[in-house]
Image (cartoon, rainbow, N blue to C red):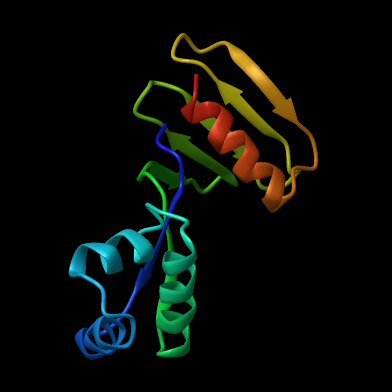
Length: 123
């Protein structure tokens, strides 16, 4: 599974202000706002963009998620893995493409669910 990426969205007006303030190219702005570079200039551009109303986005790969009437959530990954969460008990199981349980977490927290999703996507 692709890693989560960060990106800052800004208005065209804010982009023009950044270009004027830092005397930089459109490519330099894109690299900074897409976190492609971590140069001192990129850091300053990101800070300025946020001050101008920029919105930080976390971009994650899409996956199919189904919530059924029995209280289960199932997520199906491109690699054939499946994550199944019992919403009554908080137990999460990760199955590989062959249907074998690869991990099980009881009383799974939201933070741990992200870890399990990352694991499932990497199988």
